[in-house]
Image (tube, rainbow, N blue to C red; front, side):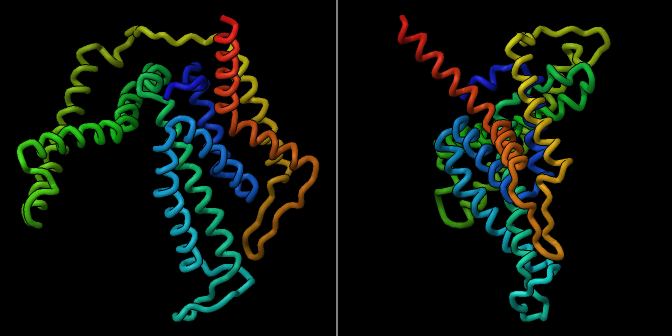
Length: 296
């Protein structure tokens, strides 16, 4: 869906996601991990609705559990030994806790990237980087929209094959396998042809040539400047907390988490505000729109 934050200038969108994804990767304090995961999930739910809920419950939660369980099998560092594996390697409390933290970070980054993919469309990406790195920006924009286009085209191909009785659900096992191979071949052919057509089309329009101009509806307005200042202020508070050691966390050789202080509460509040900024903007715009409608 088109939310209020998505309607802002592409530079605002890009800076925001760059900041929250980098913080999600480097802030390993348990509170930071939980805050970032919840914020990413809430925004993804607002953008995609039930699809995001299904993606989180059926995809991300199992991935989190599997990743967390695999770490103690390969990482045996830590001083608190719980038990020994049949091969003689110890399973430590620290490796389990770190595995859970790393898995949470991994899932959080994936959810944030799913939000990034929904907000940062290919035209926004080309608008930002088309003049700086034209070839790379075109490739990245094609990659970002590849999965949604593959899903849509896959449904078209499946429906077409079903109409002629060659879908993957008809016939015996051998016939189904042949149908799957045929559909995969069609998808690969379509993907390659689409990429060549896109490249030829952009080349014929003079994309990447010096002096080429392009039409754009994007304008950096006063609201964009205000939002940028808010993002930088909140990110600055988070960065100060990181530099001053408020988020200090060690998982090896023993788990050590910095005690809670008033400074850390301010830091966590700023981090939550940064993560929920798009949702807060959407709520503000929805309430404003309701007031306008009620006044009519």
